[in-house]
Length: 261
Ligand code: ARG
Image 1: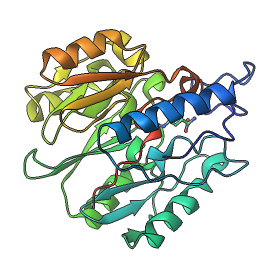
Image 2: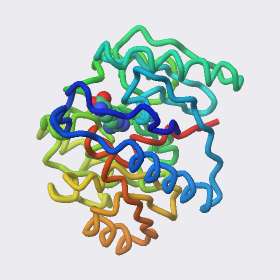
Image 3: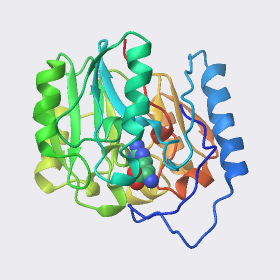
């Protein structure tokens, strides 16, 4: 995670960002801290990346890389405003001794990649349409040695895979079908017949931008209906208020880069 010390909305690269509305950085920091202590309180170890001035989106650390079984596939941002974030993430992984592979293709890390270790022997789900280049899906498959399922995003409000789909545990997902092309919806139905289906309101409340440890599902406070859906499916919803981070177009999942050693 990376604290939103320099968080602002000074450019608009997704439909949620409005540069005319001031961001409350102190509130963003307070809410981020609440998310961090929620995760540590549940027994998770949180590494903190130093925030850098001039990189207002650095709080969305999920975009910095994608790791599977100790191998890290680095990010390469589409927008120049975020390009330098990839360097900070790379330095973190190299310092911690991970096997790091620099990408040739544009991809925004866990923003567009999800991993299901127990689904069909270990599956990577990958989004394209707005940020990550489909060529990065093939590159990730080579680097990680896992089948990569390409899914096409078709609604600009849900520009990263992690705004439209989330892993609930090692084998099941939740997603909002309307964010995907008809063919991608059929692929998801085939792969995940028991998926928890979300609707547009859930997605707009950033209810799919969640982090799950297989039991606890951490999600935005606004996503009350989504909280009920995951509870009915047997998980324990834990709500955290991240209203300020929504102004940049992100929530819980965007703020957490999961480490898979
Ligand atoms: N403002 C950031 C962008 O548009 C938000 C990134 C949200 N992160 C995510 N994993 N969806 O790039």
